Image (cartoon, rainbow, N blue to C red; front, side, top):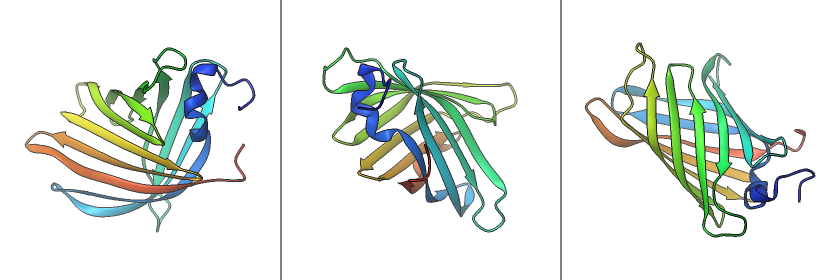
Length: 165
């Protein structure tokens, strides 16, 4: 067990650390694209993990997207499946509240709440799937907005950085 890790987080301990890799995106309303990504899961001894993500252009290194928030365990200790909530803020004016389950290295999440500022484009649905296999973390993200139904949007494969704390 990780030092000072809250007992409720034991099932999620494999996520701790910094992950980096590559991803690709597509959506009916935009051109396909690729990106570099870094994700960090950290803890402070409470029953949640801090989450920070950022992406950049693989050619120019220009920033592309970022999101930050918290992954909370809401299941009583040792109860399975592990119920989780992911609360995220996006810099383009969206706040995302996801709920789902984590088990056998797979975390499936669906947005149960999406808030936005008055200038942000409306997002109608988001769904995420993370798959943890040893030192590899992959994910897929589906999104719906305006006239576009829920559609696969992002996929990435990240590797644990051994040099990260």
